[in-house]
Length: 466
Ligand code: ATP
Ligand code: MG
Image 1 (cartoon, rainbow, N blue to C red):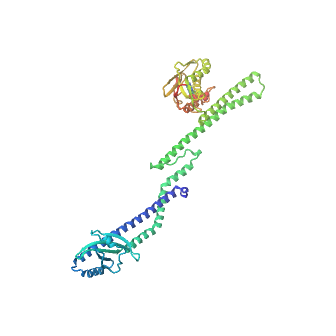
Image 2: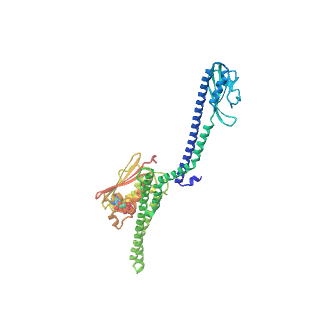
Image 3: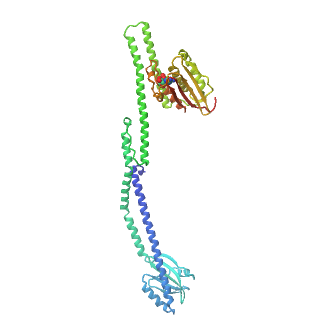
């Protein structure tokens, strides 16, 4: 439909105009109808008073032969009125000039002994609208039936002229209504126009701009607010993405540069086998770093995508912890770190075995890696029917309060860890967070500088135990 393709302003205008026209036409016909009712009421009252007067006039006569004279006189004085008078036997006693004889035997049917009057609207032989009444009157010469009628044509013409005038003024009034509708909708929609041009100004590169929120508290100001909130979120995620890319590029560059330098140096001069072997070892270490980093980036982007397999398995979290411990036992032992797992119980959760194992692995890896030799790492946990909590704690150096809120961010590392030779990539906890949240759980850390760190993972408990 055409109206669907018009813009809102024109649609509102047309709806407004159409509604005005319907109202105006309706109102014109209503006025006409009321005028007609009024016309009939006044005509009926006039006929009634004529009938009453006739009754009075006839009541005055003393002999039947006076009737003709009295009625002729009355007819002469009331030119517009046509009437005839008949006896109850339907013998016409008098008919005023121009009064046609009754078409049907109306006198008989109407001239009941009761004195009720019957009214009707008829078309005369000349096509004129007439209002008629038939009534009985008592007279000295017996009960008489009077039929009287009076033209309504003049009033009707007046009413018709009135409605024609009303309808004739309709086009200009409708045009005015359209104009008013256009102005009103233009005014109402002007904030939307402003919003559109403000939104057009906002691009991926200029996300810091915002739409002006009109201070009205109405739908439009709510819309502007909602849009701004949406732009805020977009801005944040764009910023995050930008930082992530920059960090990733930076962290990729370091091992690649190191690798390249190492290979260039070893190709440049003659080296002993020992020197060559040592160069290759360094190159291999960098290559391992590089592949670890790219794997982590891949993991993260898979988590971001949500393109991991379904989370349908019911798993024993304690068994995952046990198997990770086995793997890391050697490293812990080398660092002389005691690993305590007393409180392990059958903890069941629903999820993806491989990814949950990665979470436990990363957390253990951190605890062992950042706790100095001779330290202690331990597991706590508890399960309610709703949720299972796993705590991996250590008595290592702890994390400064300033850094604590950020350690789950990508590429975030506490300064001293950043400076360490064997420093990680800073993606481990970010990956843990993505995985735990994808499982409907939460991860957080508590830490006291110099005393140790606790990382707490909560996951929904599995409904059925495998
Ligand atoms: P990756 O795990 O990717 O190899 P990473 O260990 O540096 O690198 P995360 O595991 O994300 O990165 O940890 C972020 C930072 O949080 C670490 O660099 C470290 O500074 C701090 N951190 C994490 N766990 C501990 C812990 N148990 N004790 C002290 N500091 C920790
Ligand atoms: Mg780590």
